[in-house]
Image (cartoon, rainbow, N blue to C red; front, side):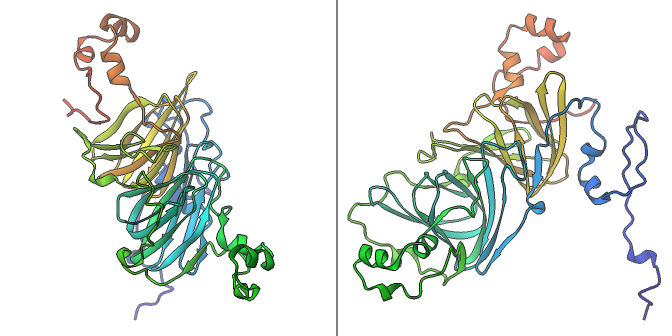
Length: 396
């Protein structure tokens, strides 16, 4: 048997340690101390492009760097302004529920928008007019609960993992109005009077908020659906995003969802973007609000242009959150060899973006050419139609 204390070249993976030096020689080696693995994941922070300048704030935070809230029945972790101070319009929660795991009956003063990443779950809600709603959610499906509407989430046979997005950057999912928390902080004689039952009916209620707990896998929806004399909610609170026909362009696809095709979602609009290797989300900006991003797979980079000669480049991987303040010009480039998938979300009832290419194409060409000192090669290539994702041209 080999001596485990003896060094062996077979035990180590050799990596090229990156150094903060540009090809033109700017910079110097970093002998340490340093976190080499983070430097490898963030090459554009270690060696920024020469076009980066100024003091653009941090626009990236990883769920892997957040506190994990562990419960019997699942876990959760969140990114708010405490983790990413620039992200004032939206916050996000990454949550996992086991088979039968329950995110308890609760409500909050913020709108909740959700995307199912893996598995399946059952969601329920009741609106202010006593109309109930229940649905089973699968991969790529959305749900939306307006502010103040009570609801629940429960994992089905395979459990589930999903992203929750709220229209308030300061919101914490721990600080919700939970049914167990309310019961625990209401005198039992008041509970008895409210429900018309003896006080001892409440001898075993939880002593505080349960938040997430382990339950039984629910029966088929048809067997447990509660008949409602007031009917169901008039607008569906769920939407099958992957079932949408996407916008297809060379290099990828985009599926846009807002109040025009998911009428219940009046506070949050979104797009699911697919970028193939060798392609990018085109240079653009959003004229209506900040952009909150969640990266589902692959890796990419984004440069945010903040005007006044300032710009900064960030690298993103699966599980990262990105943020683009209102009006900032930006792109998202696939820097890996697999497809890059991410969500871009906005505190708005409509998805809106402005394409740099389309803007230039629809402006008098002499004006554009004189402004940028460019010739026919660029001007003739401009497109009047918008391509959200573009493929790089082949090198000559």
